Length: 504
Ligand SMILES: Cc1ncc(COP(=O)(O)O)c(C=O)c1O
Image 1 (cartoon, protein in one colour):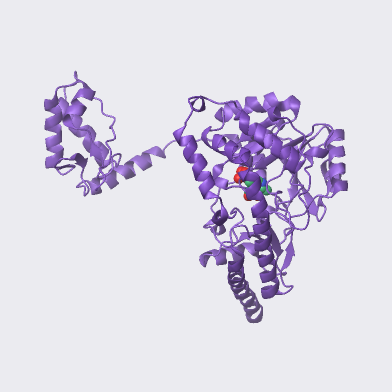
Image 2 (cartoon, protein in one colour):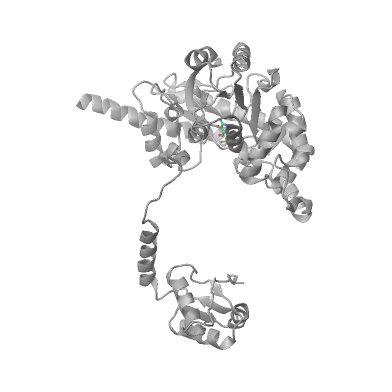
């Protein structure tokens, strides 16, 4: 059966005292809407009777206006179905003219923006962000997601939608979910917390934004890992902070260097369990050094614990927050890697004395997180599916990562150096000297191979060239083929480079 589009009520006002007759007012209003493209071809319009009631006028002027619009081809009537905006409009030309005028009109005059937004670089859609596929770093194993269980819980909550769930919620999030997350973090991540310190957020990105608003001012100096996570850089740039890049090595953030370059920083943003993007795990001595620094400098540490559930050589490393005896660590986690990123759910563990400050900022931002998926996730965790899923995925990702490492070694021998493959859902490869990762990534994107270049993760000029290769979304058996494609892109570039040397 053909679906009839539902009626959308247009915004039409008529003025009974105006000299223009009512039927002409209705005709003009509809014609303008059609010509401006504010109603779409095929869209149903209200019946004459319903519109007359809505406008509180007699039906006659509405009938007159409709018959004129029908006669001129703006409307068409379908027997038994009603009246519709015509599928092939006579006003196409005038719509374009009209549309152009509107666009030009809307650009005139001065258009001053906030200082804050002027600090941010424009969000460019770089070529390598054009799609998902073999090496996507934001793709967990969707193919192994427990859809049946998840859908069952979604359906259960659809059917039993509670009235309580329709109200504004607590700015810190849904109580039962905060309890479930707290229990998980205590056991699995050695985080020291009580449920009232846990805030549910729309992904760790929102956690970073709230944290920055609570702790930092314009001009506040902050340490950032170099290279680091570009969205942390983005938020702190937008907040007007002074970014102090602190290099990382195989032991994580080089605290000593940070102290030398800017001891009095107000905060340090780190991912100690799995540094992004080079993958180091911060050593015990660096952790203690960082905590000591924070205490002596009266600074804060923001721990981004985004994918530490997955470790391959050993058990997951305990959180930095769990070592902190001075409540100087704000701990951030996410379900983007353990479940899926469009869920937009994450959490912050807030030092006791700052809970109300975080709640106040959150309240002014979006009041509270949406209820529905918090309720679904609570059940998913309480019924044990979350823990089970992580156990299964640990095994699966270990296989996918092994397959990627083997294929890289097979195809590239030692030409690509692998780093950071002990944990998480990606590893990094360092390119031989002379190759440019962004050029290669743009070239690969033209062949629909999406590679995340390493060099944009640096703030300073001294940038290593490489790629950050995700392996979470690609089945082990597909990995060799994907790596062969990667090789074909790199080979092409090497040949081109060699060619230019010869011809030069
Ligand atoms: C370093 C880092 N932190 C956090 C996240 C997750 O962010 P979100 O929870 O906003 O999806 C990612 C995602 O790729 C990441 O790479």
